Length: 352
Image (cartoon, rainbow, N blue to C red; front, top):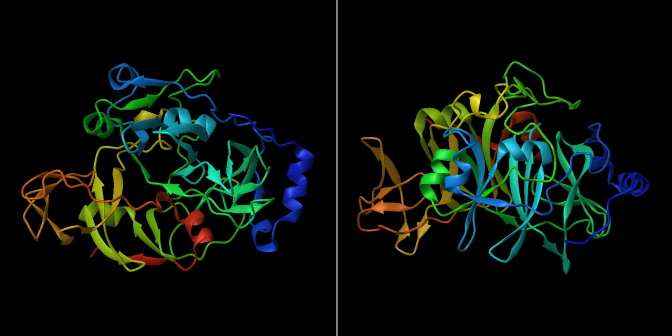
């Protein structure tokens, strides 16, 4: 992976070039460019090896390629925020912003370039702002759009990913790969430097903009963006209902909540946080036609065939056994302050 680091002089130039609206959303986070170092040569372990240091409820970012499933533990990501990887031959950047509790995975290809990404030390709308080492363009974490530099106006392709528990990953992908703590850096992996940060009564860190007051700034939600439409679903509604079905951007979708994933931002340890569960989102259309779902004795069942489905969007039994629903690429679990800054026009959906 080649590319040049971003110097402060070039960074200042890029910030000056930024559109006024985006510039007004910039906050300095403290570290210089690459002060939070990305992982550029990731090492991986087998599930059996990683089980020695990962707790069942511990959160990991789950990315499923064409052939390979990978887990990126938050206990590693929160110290590095970006992993430049290759998944089944596709250059990918797995990103996590602890201050807005959000993860996106992007293809590292745009405009004929294969790029590597680093941290700028700045926040955009309360979220991680990245740069690429090939063109020194600045990129937003939400949506992966270039904000300044030669790539301005370009959007990275989103690869579907979600934050789930280690137990979920190990059961879903026993032959999967797990990002190792052998990163080349000395960090207190497993400790949470942001303990208590996700208290709904607290205020976001390094965020000076106004929110609309519709919800507390630290309200957790899952958001989808499809064909230009944004929809949001509160954590408590997802927990209470387990399933929420909706139509976003003209596409029928289902969101599935599964208990058992710890908040990585609650306790002194990443694994010790309260149970907030995980959310996965899928399109409901299949080759057999659109499906609708309900819970039957705690099991997800489609009304068309009575097949049983898992949290991972796969039919586990019945007529459709083996069918895999397509994951919604733009699905993010985050806080209201960051999401409402990015998409103030979001349609909020009740689970009732």
